[in-house]
Image 1 (cartoon, chains in turn cyan, brown):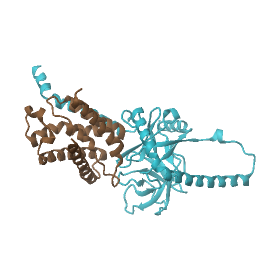
Image 2 (image 1 turned 90 degrees about the vertical axis):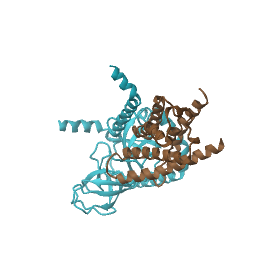
Image 3 (image 1 turned 180 degrees about the vertical axis):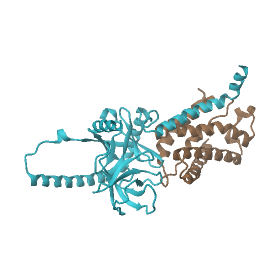
Length: 275
Length: 168
């Protein structure tokens, strides 16, 4: 017994050090796990509040580019609208307000209050949370393309696992075809992501557009991602393709969070299949 | 609350907010960033009892983790150098327990202080970037990051101490 006390006496600092290191390690490993990260994240009330305060100041510096992006998006949407109107006129029948019954997605706009892109596991914080209907595993995009998936929410803030995170996997396909692969990031260059497992017979060319395919219950179909910048000619197993993002991930302002009304239904169905 | 405690508490929060709101946004050439908050380990007075020192260092790291979504990586790396600090003080400055209350970095010769600070900074950055990378791939990136960010941190630290020393 005396020896035990002597042991504790002698190594008390080391034991205290080990205890704290163990806590830190647990937090590190939990943070890397998409389903467990709960404790340490920037979506809490205190950190979220401080970040939104600081971004209130810094957003003035990017007003010009933000306005330009909005104008560009307006042009694109107006063109789409024009296109739709002309189609409807051609068909010309009694239009039924189908929006209420067949709406699958709803969009919420939010402001990024903290962004990171230089690490291997990047997260983004936005200023909308559970009170505004944001939940875990919802898609986040902006007018230029995919940003990430929400992974943690508090009352007023939410944390997004950016596509620039080694844990992120998103279904993507070649535009106008049904060849699909999974999109991930190797942690090197923040404007280039990797598309793996796309079939060999897919007619890939440099400059081709990559977009999301509607196969996951998170992202809607046809959200832009980027263009192919490098095709792996070697015969590696996973047939990797480099994709340059449309988005400049180091310069993000406002985003849309997408909620899929059918997600629960799709998930329930898929789980049934697994059993 | 004497003068020294007030000084420590202010520097704790000053370093925290400086790191989170200013230095984390520098990203020179997209990845070089100074991590000046480890100056807390250099500033904290040397004492016989190390529990409070270890705990406050851990807390500072943890608070920075809260802000930068890094799990517990900052806490882990700052606690590591906080623990090995005593070993390097004994190694470089040849101090015994009786000297602890009088130990002051400002009074030591610059060469020794430089070695001491550089060693601790490199250890901290190496641990930090290894965990940030979290794999053995791209290990050359870890070493490059450690080198460049370490130089950045050291330049800022020595500039800072020079400026504050002059004003006193």
